[in-house]
Amino acid sequence: MLLERTIAQLDVGQVSPSQAEKMGHLGYLQWLGALPGEAGYLQEAMRAYDMAQPFIRTSPAVAVFCQLLMASTAMPLVPLELKLPARTRRGGAKARRDVG
Image (cartoon, rainbow, N blue to C red; front, side, top):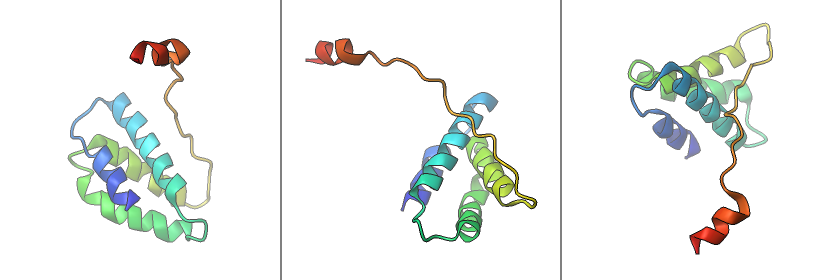
């Protein structure tokens, strides 16, 4: 299941606070994007939190993921400020030609 995979990808141990924030935000977006359309958000968020919570102490990225889950269910609802990594060039056509 994707939730377990997301948690495993985030649970890499100690990373810098900025790296943990980036990873946690990307993990949240990955989890959110994989939710079935008919899923109840609150129930899924609580299930994700329950599964990720044991890793909070040892993985800062999982802690950020859990913070986002909790913030997204707090009342009154407020927009989350999700941070995406900066766009970077990866080589384009030249890099594809150089591979062969």
